[in-house]
Image (cartoon, one colour):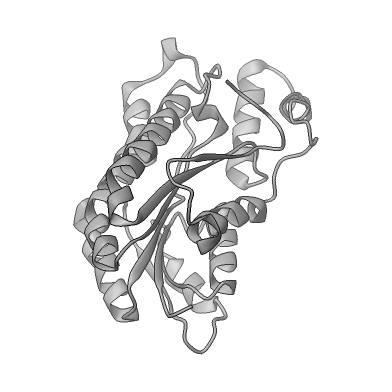
Amino acid sequence: MSKRTGILTGAAGGIGRATTERLVKEGWSLVLVDRDQSIGDLAASIKTGDDQTVVGVAADITDPGTYGAIDDAVAEIGAPLKLLALVAGVLQEVGAIETLEIEEWDRVFNINLRANMLLMKHFIPALKQADGGAIVTVSSWYGKSGHGFFGAYCASKAGLISLTHTAADELAKDNIRVNTVAPGNVATSMHLDALNEEAAKRGVTFEEMKKTEWDKIPLGRAADPSEIADAINFLASPDSKYITGATIDVNGGCLFS
């Protein structure tokens, strides 16, 4: 395939790093975006082919004023923007709705939903100019049903699924496919930290909490980040050229209505 550029948010996280490796293997040039200031060092450490470039941009995705640096990185690569992979997300501080601070609600929504809308709004024109491409968001199985102590997280991910489907409907005529990957539990530090927090809230041990959650998974384990990256890569590739407006469940067999 000809040289093409993708933007990947949340690139310093577990799923982000795995997705970076997968997309580079498939020949993509990438702009890696993360609030972690070390993202430039991460980008520099990625081994690429002769016709590939990986650039790191430290940016706050909740602030559109930082998007100019991402634009500059795309221009530096000099290949059409064909992919917007919106991986960045946060969990909430574990807690019941009756004790949930509005500041925490706003923090979660600003990153998990509002920033994704702002990024789509900013970069859709470039995807149109490149004669189409793909947008892939990362939602969650928790966006398909409610779960106690995660009200803000569940609601924000439900909103992201709806936003993704709406964008797919709007952009189909422009040959821009828009889909979301909905992971279940993924063995990242974010997931393990959440298990620790929830265990403390419920007054049980970490191992008890992990067993409770992982026993719900028919395949009996959390996903490796690379397994989520494989799904993102599929939705970014020509192999999914007739798929848009889809929510791809990658959750080890956990099914929700």
